[in-house]
Image 1 (tube, rainbow, N blue to C red):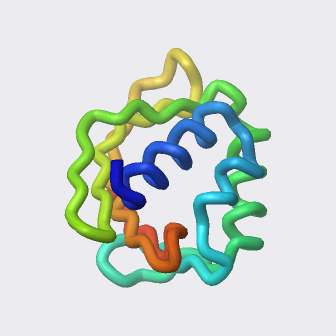
Image 2 (cartoon, rainbow, N blue to C red; image 1 turned 60 degrees about the vertical axis):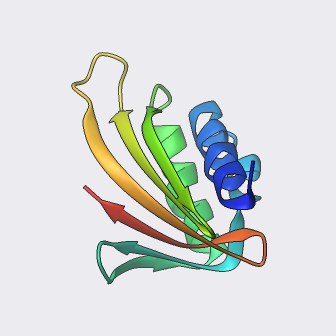
Length: 111
């Protein structure tokens, strides 16, 4: 398994476990997060911590299921089915993870 695939899976597993420390360990200190293509949503690991810790607390049943993953070099593209609550209708999202220095340095979401 290459680094892009490994980090995409590790952060997905941590997301589903609501393990903020394991989740953050996948991200570069200066990570940039965008709504596709280039609308900046937040940046830096501290912003990731704040946003996802709140999500994990607000939606304890939240879960993302991998529908498909493609990997090419330093990029992993995940198609995910996400539910905020167990009985909610799912929504689908695509996350494009770009790896730099063995960490996720950029994420672009398509929702």
